Length: 200
Image (cartoon, rainbow, N blue to C red; front, side, top):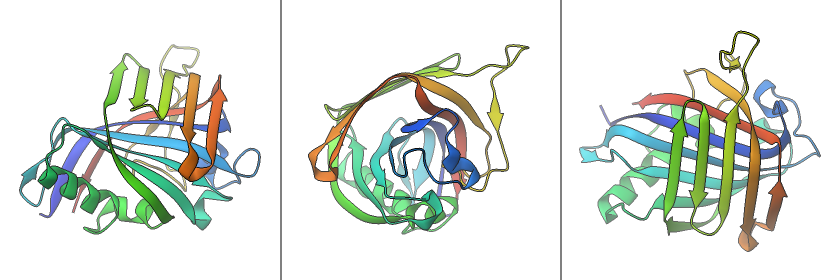
């Protein structure tokens, strides 16, 4: 086994809730500026333990999500050693194959890789994400009439292949990255949460 990582996803973007990208439609407004963060509760990559670390990206998606050509700024947990950073980049750039490789191939250009202080918290469906001084997001899960989380499954696009995703909204989404031309300050737009297990 090349790698096995499991943990949680937090995602927020400029689309309105629910994000049309997940069913293959064009993003609201024609383009999407989204932040994706995967926190690894437990995992190893080619023998390197990456438990407790987070990898994230801020991405500009120029049109339909499935057409690719994303431009992305990658964030590696500042607590990662050089070996752990290399391991995370190997997985999330698709170099090691597996379920994350299909997502990685949608990224046409990585404008940079930054080590950052990352805050990733999820408690009872609510989340908080901070990526250095570039991204601030608060997330709240949507719930049905019986108070259970609203779930997306079997979607044509996903950032957590093989797992259901929980739909929500972001009371706060602030993102700024000159390298991507992104400056976002929104409330009440799309948020996604979920768990993942990736292995190859």
